[in-house]
Image 1: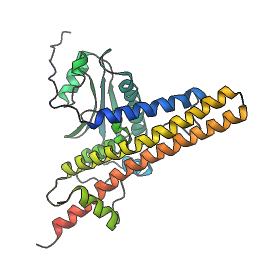
Image 2 (image 1 turned 30 degrees about the vertical axis):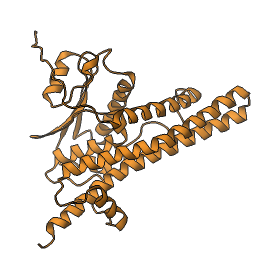
Image 3 (image 1 turned 120 degrees about the vertical axis):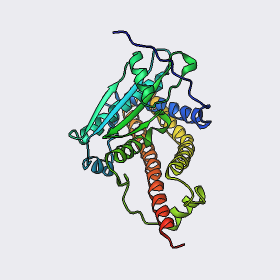
Image 4 (image 1 turned 90 degrees about the horizontal axis):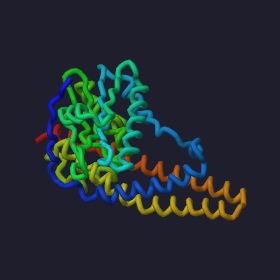
Amino acid sequence: MNSTSTKVPRPPGPPARRAPVLALFCFLLGAGLAVAWFEYGKSGLPGQGAAGLSGDILDQLRHLNSPVQIQFYSVLPPGSAAQPVQDFSQRVDRLLSEFQNANEAQIQVGRNISAAETNADAAAAGGLRAFNLENGAACFLGITVTSGGQTESLAQLRPEWEPALPFDLARAILRVAAETPPPVVAKSVPLTPAITNEIMRLIPDVNATSPEDADRIFHADFLDQCAKAGAEMEAQINAAAQEVVKAQNSGSLADLEAARKHLSQVQLEQTEKLKAVAAHLQLQLAVFQQMKAAATSAPK
């Protein structure tokens, strides 16, 4: 069966300036973790494995009001996408399996993971954003979420936003599956001066800011926080990895075991810090929604 070739338009606008910095940070972090992988073998670090969905997300996914269809597009032609992007694609694939396992009766995942032209056309038709056009054939890496007549898309998945992906995908699922979905985080968050002042610093006029604009502002702040954490993570993980190499060269089994444990602990601590940053993003969104609701309902 012949198919008509559709030329994919070049996406408008240059990439964000933060992306190269954060991509470098993720690469350096991955390099440090690769040492840990080498030292511990394929069984992985103690306590390391699938990231696992938080209890809040699992609870929401298990109580969906309608079935949801997720389509994952990973169209990465050879020579167009760098290896870190392809590795990220595989992690997204595993994350989607976690989502489906959370509620197999209501969540179905379709995968379009070859570089076939038909997959590229389908991705473009689904509103996903082409990238890497300067390197050859167009790449697509994104997700569409559909329930009934409602569809949302995560137009281009980026490795530097990976810690926030479970929350972003969960919110997309909840929005299409219900008319008024509850937030992924707790429904009611105490409006302490610390968090409200933080929101006001980022968004001085809450009432005049749309939820979509607020989402973009909070995600930009999230990237800033990840960038600030990057230097510390790189230094600590690289130092711990060097300890492993030094102990291995010394021939002392006791020193090697201690160095391995220290590297594992550092990696786990830094992973928890990234999770905390991602969770704070959701807290900001929940507090903004409460502040906006309060401003809207206040007497004129």
